[in-house]
Length: 297
Image 1 (tube, rainbow, N blue to C red):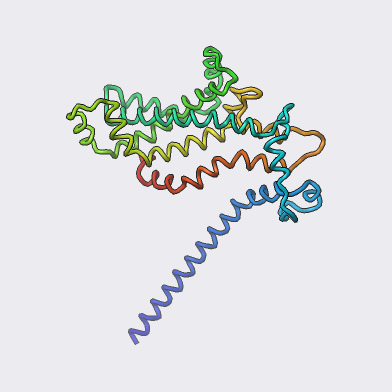
Image 2 (image 1 turned 90 degrees about the vertical axis):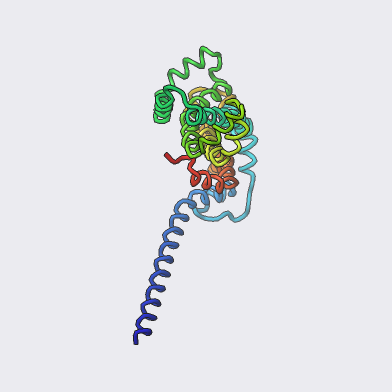
């Protein structure tokens, strides 16, 4: 009798665990559907012709695959008065994002190393001031940054936008690397100093090779923030130097008498593809970087 009652309890517990697991999977599936539904609608609409869009419904699948909207969004969609498509503006974003991400990541790693392993008087005060910069809203820096770019002769240019994103991103990159380097043993740095290694020798030969998790986290964070930025792009660039986010806004708001929803959807997906690709290709490294303490305070 005792064995039978224990077996019944075990079976009941097993059923309860399966029900909880099934309920959890159901909730997660609902969240996935909720978040993926807009993407499905965008892709479906971009593959339809205008006639099919008018005749069908928002969630209906395309009757036949049509990439004409994608071709037009890339090569001939009107961005304001220009009808060159998104291609030149995507290139502007690449020219902006790659140097800005690389420079801000490198300087953040250098700052984090200096603030943790090569400490000096006032290091904590400097870090606190830099950390304060991470909480300054974008709108606060628009006017002083515009004046600075004007003085430097970089107003309305891609190099000027690179400078803006590099300066604004330093607070975040320094925070990421500083918190990661705290977990690195001080004995390694002291041993290298005893062997005669210099500041940059220790940084490049010892510290930087150990920092891959923090580097990946910072690269993904910075690339996403810079590529998706709209406010700095529209405030500090004009015309042909606009990044793709500003061009996308102009595509959607440009009308020639017929609203081409399929072209708008295709253009939006094209603008979002680089960040999506970064997360798909490096998402696992991003999680590893977080678990390794890259953003642990």
